[in-house]
Image 1: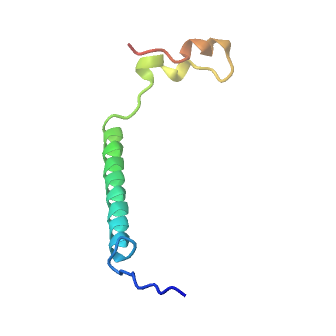
Image 2 (image 1 turned 180 degrees about the vertical axis):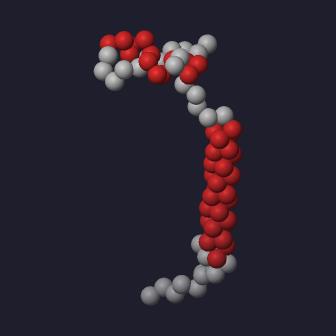
Image 3 (image 1 turned 90 degrees about the vertical axis):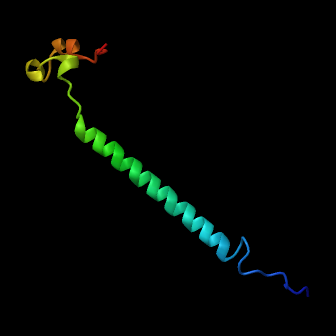
Length: 76
């Protein structure tokens, strides 16, 4: 039977690899959290307003063929 004498606790398959994986996952988590907070703050500063695109939505009926004129229009 062959003896396993080539073991290393601090090798890439040991504690060092675990620490590298942990640091990598925590840095990805921090990046995604910061990015999500930035996007959320940007959305809070300028919320979506459909009024410039379709005009007043008070005239839209629940079931009507005239609703086609309220379809998406390019705001350019």
